[in-house]
Amino acid sequence: MKPTVRRYALEGARDMEREDIWLRTRITEGAEIFSRQELAQVHDLLAGVIRWRSRLDAWIDLFANRTPDPWVRNLLRVALYQLERSTRVPAHAVVSESVELAKRVKGPKVAGWCNA
Image (cartoon, rainbow, N blue to C red; front, side, top):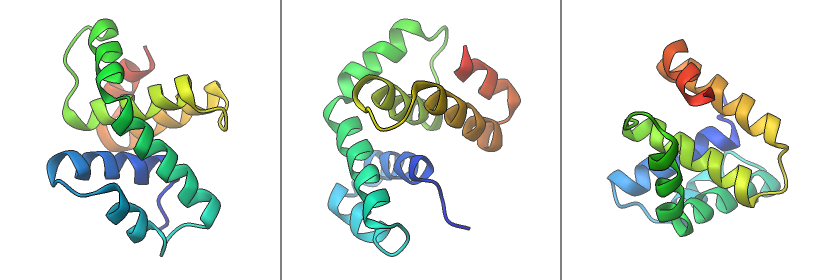
């Protein structure tokens, strides 16, 4: 099954952090999966998360009542970047899709925490 743009960007953020994979490598791999428009969205999300990572982490640390695990932190980075910098996706869709992804991957408890 084809991953969503958000899921692919989230996995890319994780891979780039853990395995020192370059943005260009992730985009090249995505060319086999996504349309040009979707690939542009992936690029925007990954480049934005890289560029604004310190600020995104500061927001997460400021508002989180506990330290999120690395997967959840990357999910929050992608969502916060979209909420703050992207005009392509409505805010309610960003929140809804992020919470649903958290629920599928980490379960309802984590999804509820992400939604708060």
